Length: 331
Image (cartoon, rainbow, N blue to C red; front, top):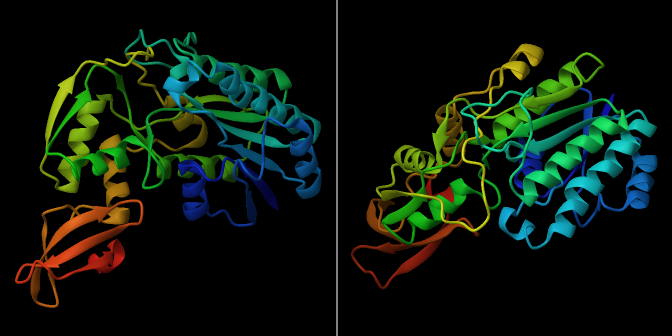
């Protein structure tokens, strides 16, 4: 039986894995950062001795790219030292490791990257993630490192959710159009992990793999597609990146190595987006939209995405209103 320890389980990847992953004969033991601090070698070792996992999936990471520049010590502590702790214990106790890395290990000077291309991160976040990768390799454990990009889901704070939130407040948004990569849904990453676990990690397939949505795009084009598929009318103004922290301009990755090794090719990012949108049926929920409830015409007066609730007012009497959960509105 596979016994799988999942770190960083309260993030969007951890939440997705808990909801969508199923492997016969496998048990997932998930811990959030309050329950398990990967930067503490002793606490991590104690837990491993208690539960005796066969695999570890590491989602724990410091991911705030802007704050990483001023909190470099904390960033490296989590993304490098914490990963080193996991890798060393994996080697000591013969545990197989799946680790999530990033497209930011590349410098962005090429149109498309393979795993054989030189790494040259341009910011602290990318440097810390690359250092974590090197610690895994140095440890000698069996591992699969997945370099992925622009992760989004129906959970937590991410670009997709932020676009939906902004659409409730404005009819026009400025979005960066000079960074190129590919959005990757948490559902796709979860499927990739299931496939890795099912095939298992051995000396032949242990290594680094690019894994992201197919199709090269920009943040502006991603936003346009979100609103198009969600049927939300909004104007997108494409603008250059004006953030202080440098980002690699082009980090689109070839996933051929993963497809060949594990016999799975990621979906095109537009198709994967359709799956995410369909899961929550978000498109009808927008301030100002008309809905019909019990044969009465109503208007959505307000939306609270954190609570997944909306305020409904009757058109005949706008002073009368009530709160509905999204699931009840869409049923």
